[in-house]
Image (tube, rainbow over the protein chains, first blue to last red):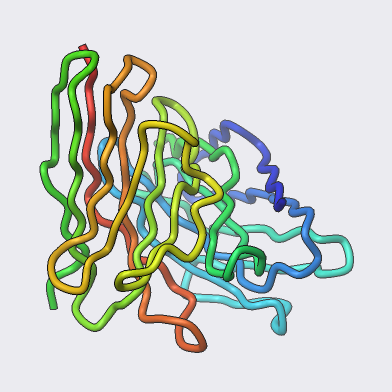
Length: 114
Length: 115
């Protein structure tokens, strides 16, 4: 089945700096890659996603890039703010078992320091 | 438009009891997914359902766990004879359906504590 690896597990940046989180996946047939932000005790919230027919997508301070050949995708947050502090999860949508199953990475604890 | 709803938000059970977790998808969504999140860990897929059908249950433990999404009413995740290792947050997500948006929207979760 699909395997998603995520790095780093923790990331500390100064306010205003950029943060980059990287994920790799194993199933070349995966075609959709969402990123979720989860604050402590809250639900995962979709912040950005990308489909396999697109190489890059941007939404204000957040961008995602996808390299299908290398099977990796990255989340980029620019001009970080304290409210960006949270756990971020990447995921990949596989096509086995009827499709739609999301396999998640292990998460990155992002801390934005003042 | 109400989001995905789950209840109860917190559930405490003693070992050997049954736990029933309920999930109502977003309006217009016909696909429901259940994920489990152990403390300090990521989300693990359990089961994917459509109305009256289990599409993929590859993440469900073979024993004690079952799920349904009846024609009327919420989806139910049922855990029989709970053990301490079942303590976790259980999240439900929903999506519109095949061929449409792939986005899955999560509910607030049910935090199960087994004493």
